[in-house]
Image (cartoon, rainbow, N blue to C red; front, side, top):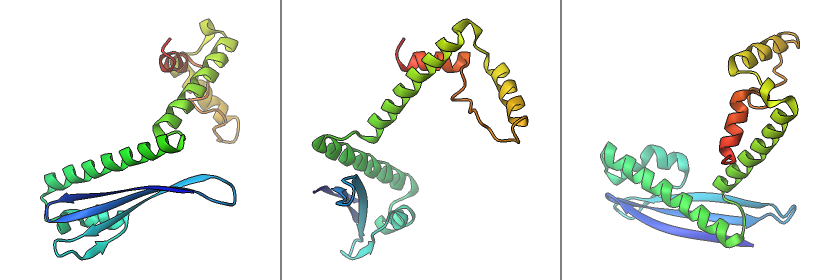
Length: 166
């Protein structure tokens, strides 16, 4: 299985051809993706085919000024994001943004449960929680066993409620 989109965009005196592919590896059925760039100069010559070349050389190749180059770069990145989103919808898989939102919701539900189990009225302020974490870290050979994002605190409780729209 391979799904791909190809777009060609012209800026200044060159063009960039973007290919976004989603494919399934046969060993584990995991869906992977790749984004490839090909930069064509004003003479029709292929001058680069990697993100690194694209980032460092596009303004020079396209003969764009700094502001025009930044605008072209932003436009191309927005197009790439749209291509990824389109293929994700076609394949019925979550986009990166949907995965981020899903992780945030899971974190928020877990944090609210932790805070309610601890007792919402008993939650520490962020400054007290930091002191507690520092003291705990000092008693455990300097290893941070509880991150500030995992510790029940007033700030995390409020953040979790906001994420869930409560």
